Length: 108
Image (cartoon, rainbow, N blue to C red; front, top):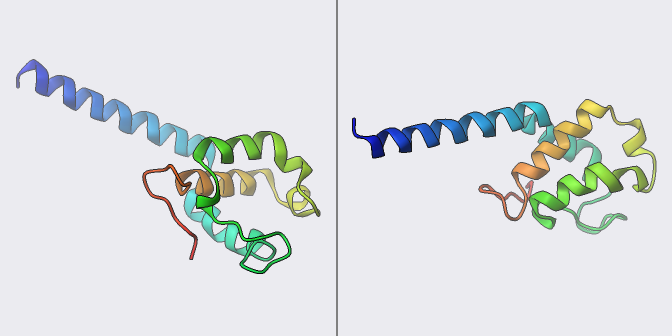
């Protein structure tokens, strides 16, 4: 194996390791999708009182910023009644499916 191939393999493995660590720390995106549909789409569906909201409504950094700073100001009590772990799961789903993510999703 030449040094270029070695470098490429090393970089790919490093990127995978870092991405996996972030996902594990952040939450479970699969569970987050279910929780988003169950808890958020009630008000944030087309025609809902909170206005339509999909994962693609924001970028990855906007979703993270929302959950770090603005979620506490969310109207109603859904954010205060939802477990912290569940909020991390929802945040991970929205982050992974954001408009600028590798896999944007509408949560259909």
